[in-house]
Amino acid sequence: MTIPEITAAEAAAMIHHGDLVAVGGFGPAGSPKVVTPALAEKARREHEAGRPFKVDIVTGASIGASCDGELAKADAIDRRLPFSVNKDLRQAFNKGQVRYNDLNLSDNATLLRQGLTGRISWGIIEACDVQEIHGKLRIYLTAGIGIAPTICRLAEKGVFIELNTWHSTKIIGMHDIYEIEAPWFRAPIRITQPIEHIGLPYIEVSPDHIKGLIPTHLPDEARTMTEATAVTDSIGEHVADFLLWNMEKGHIFRNKLILQSGVGSGANAVMGALGRSHEVPNFYIYTEVLQEEPMRLIKEGRVMGASTGALTLSPDHLKDLYDHINDYRGRLVIRPSEISNCPEIIARLGVCSLNTAIEVDIYGHVNSTKICGTKMMNGVGGSCDFTCNSMLATFTCGSTTKEGKISSIVPFCSHVDHTEHYVDAIVTEYGVADLRNKTALEKAEALIAIAHPDYRPLLREYMKLAGHYGGHTHHLLPAAFAMHDTYRRKGDMRLTDWSEYIVES
Image (cartoon, rainbow, N blue to C red):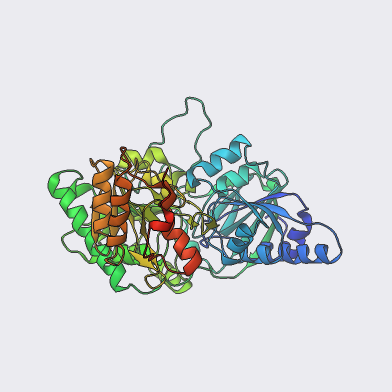
């Protein structure tokens, strides 16, 4: 092997203030774990010496705490894109300490290739094995890919590979690595079945492009999902019933059900509840992240095959997968994020999407990113990629949060990521609001019906007041955010009197 073995500190020493550092992996799955903490330590030393040190960070999606958390705490990030779930970095976004650019994940690699988000200085990726064959280096990735192929091709100063022996080389062969061609008149991406392969199981680069191998033995930083609740179980049962009803009506096909599931404990629990519904036929998954419940359903045969961008599993669950890898061969494929989230493929396959909303307004607009319209939660991630292109686009949410002090159904979303034009259905523990083929006022009636009982009278009173002003979409603009404002002032959305928000013209 002609690639030098170096330490994380030696790698960090080569990275300079103002560099754009691109990091492989998708979520905590397959993300590097030692170079970025060393880079954070370098930033602290530079700051103590009175010198500026910040870098721009681009990743495939969210990333492990070893990257986002360590760098945020060291005040080492100037600009970050396109998505993050880390608490420390979220606080930095909302304080204006880090410039955050929220992107659809399917656009990320394309924008990098176009040069619109900057020229990549350095790449950092994780691998379970590297092999030099006929003068080329083959890089075999671990549990997540993200934008690793694009990083390896575009990093101008070079790429660091964390060679992580914690990950089993048994995963080799599970990856399907394919980069979308540049415009114009590019060829179709010829995926016509959820788990077919069209690319290579490795990234191939010149050995000269790799500036060092850093040996590691560390697990991924994914946490175990929280247990299902009565609310998530109820939501899952409603989703199952809704899918079955659509099958009976012929809106979707019983023998060709392909689902996408969003990120988080709620989405994981809903998928588990859906799998327990024996009336729902066995199905495929085409998604960006596979969590614990979908993996269990693959093993049980309920999921016939799954395509994903990452295996976001706790270390124990990922070890179990490696120990039983033959149970998943031919039924599981891991793809780069521009393929796992590709609008062309999502539309061609007829995917039914299941994503999570922060809030939904009475006309079907969805906020999935910002608390009260101002504080960034995580970012839009891949939810737009799937919502805009799915055969059936569904959002789920509990009807309330914060012990009932916040209603998830509101008069007007404080921020909109998904407009009513792409949102087909909303599901809470109180039922399904099917928004298809409904007028604005019919959507409002359906959505108020699945709001928490404490908030239904409040929402109906808003509709009554707004109705006096007419229009295709009834709104009383001075009162549209009254529930949000009441929560801001009193810590509870349940206002008792609309009169202070009614301003006569």
